Length: 243
Image 1: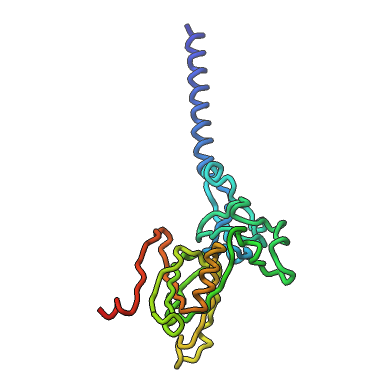
Image 2: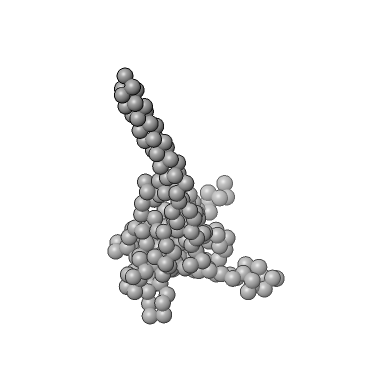
């Protein structure tokens, strides 16, 4: 009888010990953290990653193992790489060749002076073309790389004999925007006479259309929502405005 009680007691102790150990291990895993590299602020596409763009945060190990398996844990693994996608502020930097050109492969994508060579980021089925626009035609110089715009053409009445406006291209990606320093402009002038160059990413046929439009009239860019849809606006001429 005593022997049976002893074995039961030992078994209870073993079970209690196993449960206690399992609970301790689980709670300890919740306390364990690992370093994860995140973007300190938004990092644009096709730029070299600098140290001041990054910061290290501590993430729960269990979460990192399941949700952040490909996230970088060391800043030195990222610095010098070139982004292939825009990385939002606070997002973990993924060690993914679709997101980042790793530092050890960057030589193919930079010029002799170390600057990023943009031509290496042009898709094979696209072309780059720039338009020089005043603030009135470029959404008050608010455009940013990656924005989608619609291109509106207004004819030159002296050339065509009839002035009209027509939306010739839609949802065109802005590849690059010339950075302007307004502090260099005289206060009395403001933005008057200011011209900004906006580079667009176009299909070859769209590039031909835009080339003719630039030479035969005036171009305006309308900012398109990121989730916008194509529309079918009618062409407008002067007689319609005078109704």
